[in-house]
Image 1 (cartoon, rainbow, N blue to C red):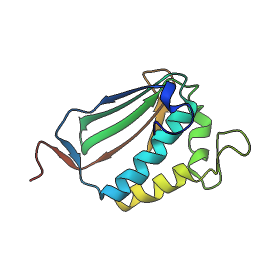
Image 2 (image 1 turned 45 degrees about the vertical axis):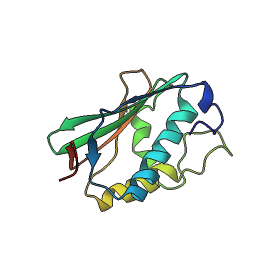
Image 3 (image 1 turned 30 degrees about the vertical axis):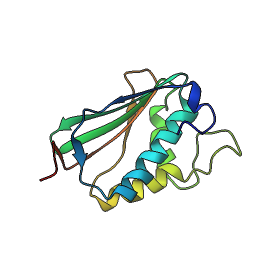
Image 4 (image 1 turned 90 degrees about the vertical axis):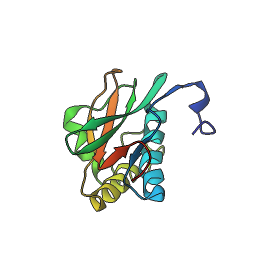
Length: 134
């Protein structure tokens, strides 16, 4: 991510404790998290944080930014193909649709809400484990 525009000036925080693993194909994980981090990079004012916390149904991975956020009435709309919050010519509107399609293969969905950093939080929960894989 650091080679992309503005990425080098952002404060990236990896708040994931060592040893946490999600049960997800590594290529699918890269596609999902890559799209989500890229969106955070575009919208963040200065800070992005990635965290994983135990949830009722597994481990919840969250990506937070300190950008302008997404209005509650636009969150569902942005999941559709071709829908982008970026200025014309700056986004394809495919990122969140791809993320949604991949997560549906794992029986989960993307949550979009307000971030504790003041911007947007995107999160999803998958079965996982803490420590070495079983």
